[in-house]
Image (cartoon, rainbow, N blue to C red; front, top):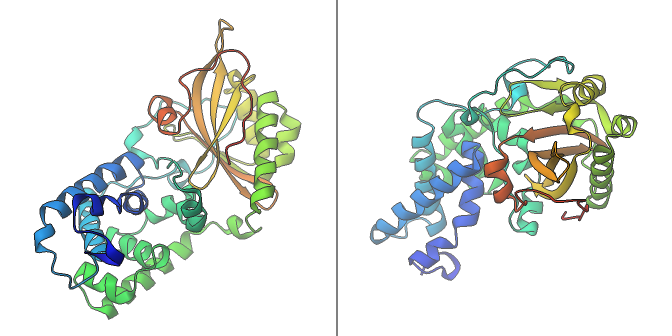
Length: 327
């Protein structure tokens, strides 16, 4: 038997899959890569189960394997990011240019168990996951294990094969780097309560579907951002976001939004009207962030072929689509 009666079997190891996926997603910034890393970690754990001697908890042992898989994946030095991590804001009235390599960008993560997602809080938000990518891999692992997952300094030291003093020093450096990168505007207002966030999300979806620029302008924070992976372009502020929507993105007029959740916040599958008027075609997964009573960030991911099935969104819409709340 292992932790809390977890059996030392393939089925027992499988019980760690969900939490390991969240850990590897934060480490790698990609949900697809996280799933692959977890699968590799569980296979390694199963093959080496006979070597588990119980000196640490089974959970710590499995996390050590998963950490090593992630560190191997990060050895190339490639770092995923959001557009605002790479350049300054752009004029919303100009086209975005060619798309960049999809492997360059942070990916959205579907929410699993609602209670677990609520407990995860800010640690699954896109901005936090993007900030983590600026940490060296070992610092990144240490901070996630300590501050997100609640591992002790001793457990992290054993996991890394270091001393407690070294683990604490690594954690302090990671916290300092992360604090320096924290967006000051994110702390200007508290996160809205769940009922308020639901109301704001519905207002946003209705305003976007009507393409009501006045209502959207009232909902957007003065420093709200809009970014468009896999394009490097992003905008800041209501005037540039409105200029984008009424200029290069005017084809989004008449879109329908279907609600889902991503990274612990409301998200929408956006469907643009088909030119022949026979329905709507997938266009983007919009992940919407809120602070206080305003929308502070919109990230529109264009990889609908992969993302829409992952988030349970249909391949197309026929006729009118109803806004059915799923938050």
